[in-house]
Length: 158
Image 1 (cartoon, rainbow, N blue to C red):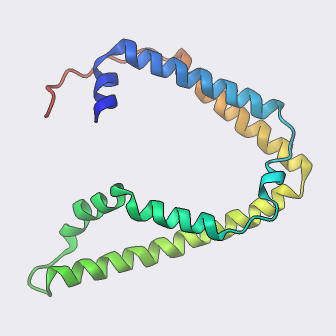
Image 2 (tube, rainbow, N blue to C red; image 1 turned 90 degrees about the vertical axis):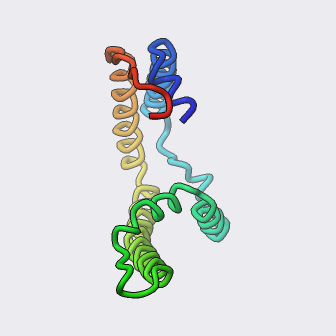
């Protein structure tokens, strides 16, 4: 709320943030294009996944965005005459979590398989670094070259 209001109402702050972000993305893209293709092999070797899973679980649990989304999105699916609202919320939340686990679990498995395949190929690493570096540099250049939008002039609190 705070930073977004300042940036949306102040073109100079927006430009400073845009230039800093654009320059950073161009720099990161350049570094990726010029880097070797080790793709973090030294970091990825012999690490257990348990601490990462635990950290992700705790971060997800304490992140208020998911809870706010559930509170804003789920009431439209609760039918007060069908069953107690608390039970319906629990069932809907459980169904949502199971679907998320299936989708995100599939993504994680496929990402792990793809990551292992890419780590075994130096050429794939170079190609991936080059592609991602060019994309980051292009996004950064776009930020640097875009026109400053007009500030939003809505009253605070509306």
